[in-house]
Image (cartoon, rainbow, N blue to C red; front, side):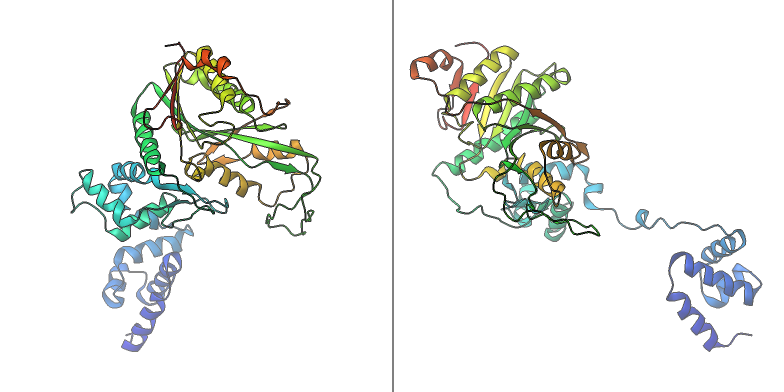
Length: 398
């Protein structure tokens, strides 16, 4: 007959173990002291009969049962309310900004979890079915948003900034639900100098990787143009080795469309999110001329929707640049081939990036006179309230 002290000590020993090890200990005790009888073991030791039986079966067969811990417990809120994720993204996307230093994958927000929860109520969610403010914060983190406001220094704001943001949000939401409209986000990244440069990267290797401290006298300079398909999250990167000009950017758009148009035979309108940079601004005559020609060639209506000045990090494609910087990280981009090939191995949101290289010299400073521009103006319609930040280009004049 086992005494109380022995039973207590044995129970405490089992309690200190988990999973397979705990079952193995319980099965050994049952075998040694209770002749492998699960019912008696349960009555005297207080262990569940099913656990004892499982441990005995594992001991006899030598096979281990795997514990499905992930299948236990309460499900996450977004699993119980799948529509909630779509509603949350719809609320926060207009407020999302890429980390200015591209140091992490988070999109920073200037909207709090409390505000998100309040807006969910306005969308029709009842108080009883909504998660708490703290849970909303956790959901935002799991979706890749960080509740932290990051300003791009120097932080400037023009008087139309709020109106421009409202216009972007309104047009983006409309475009995303219309079946014959495709929305893309477009921007160029800072030029990449090619050479034995460290680029402040970090890498785990046994041998220390050494790069030049300064990036003077590069072998070449690459200009990356990124195009993000907001419907599929696929990113295309077009590298040029000349200058960042309107012609390079429109050539990149044409290359992208030629490769993708077969997937969108039903598309009648292409909406483009831009950041109002000098090569793509609403006043850049060469850019508007080339886009008017592209519209005629493809028979697509082109809708240019700009983010406010000094707020380029809100453009969705910026998050792809963040991913590329972290992907390159400590690599030494000693040649154009290495840089292009390395970028082509980037996967963002589970989708492989498509990379192309354009070996063409572009002339800088190409502009049109007012008289030359007049024949393209008939295709261009500007917003009455935001003429520089909302432009529609039609394939036909008038």
